[in-house]
Image 1 (cartoon, rainbow, N blue to C red):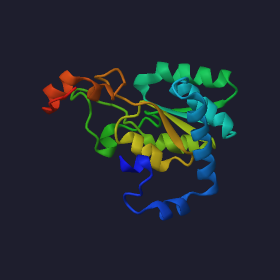
Image 2 (cartoon, rainbow, N blue to C red; image 1 turned 135 degrees about the horizontal axis):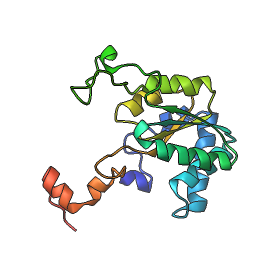
Image 3 (tube, one colour; image 1 turned 90 degrees about the vertical axis):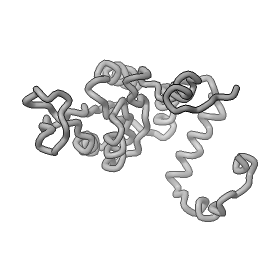
Length: 188
């Protein structure tokens, strides 16, 4: 917390300052401006659109989980109605069977089950030359593979959490859950 007060706790300041490129500084300034001007006033979706506009990004990609197809469609419509060109890629892109990659199937009775394909999603959006990608509910690990293989910078709009209605932070806001699941005694 001393960093918040200006202390260089790890002696990284000089290296960090030198590491920021011109494009990275532009991103930092724009995101900082959005925070300063709209703190506690805009939703994450509004911030994504404002950031894209200020960065002069027009081609946006959506990498989404098939289980959040409805949410991805709504997001697509909102972005398109705000002047963005939108491309999307479903997690089941290419239809590769899980058995072909040695991935465990959900049900033992299923003969065929398409694997989630985050590298395929990245390849699809790379081919569309997207300027920013928006992740909608990719599974843990899949989101990392997507980010690693996507050429455009990526941001997350929805984090998958089936138990907490895609609100993973809820796990640390519930005193009952913290005590029951992790044995943490919560002091108020």
